[in-house]
Length: 77
Image (tube, rainbow, N blue to C red; front, side, top):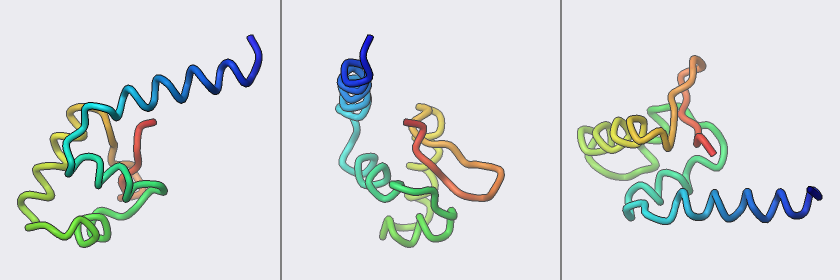
């Protein structure tokens, strides 16, 4: 299988993976183009801290993001 076919398949899987996200989840995914410290991410989300924490927890449970040992969040894909 050629590299271009693999890339097309990967892009298709990734776009389908993020297709059913809520507006808030899409915002977080967009913010996480690179890993980001938790406090910085919550500030960038521009929502009440309890709401932001709940959203991040739900996204971790859905395995959309994860919290690394370096105290920052990153996208799973």
